[in-house]
Length: 285
Image (cartoon, helix red, strand yellow):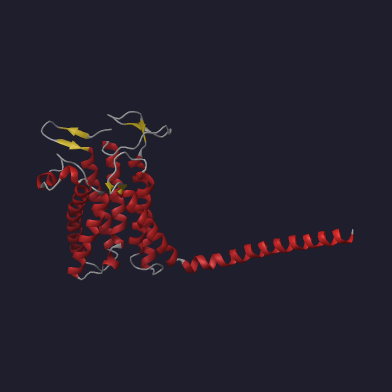
């Protein structure tokens, strides 16, 4: 792993920092491309983006401090000094970013539900770059494994899972799917806000799957915080999608149910007839 990409004596260029810059610029570029599809003003949208970034950083730090209160206490200095007392929560960042953006849209009288879908593919792309940065810098470590796809981390015993790289691939796939979904929403095949709901479900599912093979966890009342929130989100939005696609499921489900029911009833009838014949034959004897 390579925490420092370049050491120029007077300044150090960190690998994770480089990937964060790439995440910001590529995410902003895709957002700009998406917003051009709408009638929204680009300057207002990007003002909202910058405010959302500030909100996400604050809430990310705040949630981490709350969940590790025994280490931080009420010290404002420890809260501010991220280098000395590192730690951020990705769930906190997402909650803070969406909350700040929602407030900004309310002030500007921009429909959150109509606009938020265009933020999702850039967000997935940015998350993918961020996770790649975590992998190449070694800042996020997977649990120990004997799986043939593994890597040795400096300062850790044994071979480790490539957890952040797996997440990066999943988020990149999420970016592709969400980009395609935007056009389905524009064709009114799905409701506005559908891509946002997909993000909540897909992100939570990805985090739930891979949080088990990480070594650093945040805990709330003795429970794994990320796992707990992920389960709640996955179940909630799975129920929503089942309800939303109930018509499609029923249209495919009814013929299948009738076919299975016919076979089941036919099988029972056949066995009943065979049993009746066997009984009548026994009586004749």
